[in-house]
Image (tube, rainbow, N blue to C red; front, side, top):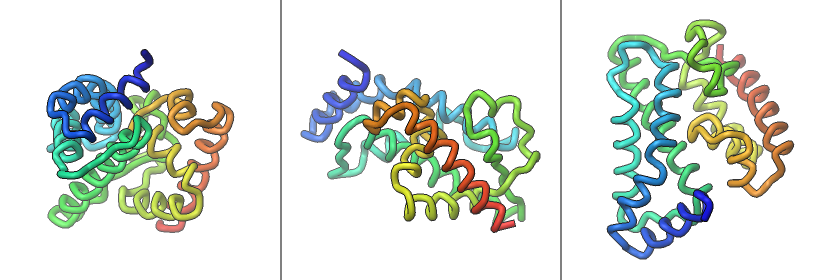
Length: 192
């Protein structure tokens, strides 16, 4: 059974109230979420007060602990996890900014996990608030491209996994990814 099918089956058990399925779900998705959180946290400042493991635990517990929360399938779960991670880090950055007057930085050019580790966080970087505003605009005008960004950048899925999750061709994901990055860069440039 594929990982995608296994996750969908366990999610349906969680949806039916099976408490044991919560633990199974965590073991199925934990490493993938932790890898993405680590990559994402690598773009943050070195002395960040949130650790990747704590971020994943917080997001997972929030998602699975909500009474009546339901995840239709693997794609829906990872989309929700990506959104929760994005919101958590955005809120954390906003609070820190208010206290310290700092702007956290992200770089649209390094939205691929492999490039993140070598990226200079100050090179052509924009703040999280600009990225969040651009993401909201993208969601409003092109939901599929928004989903591609959420699954690639925030949930950490590879191109083929995104294609499988969304039920589209790999070439479609590649085009959507490239176009979405251009759109986000243009929108964030407007914020400068």
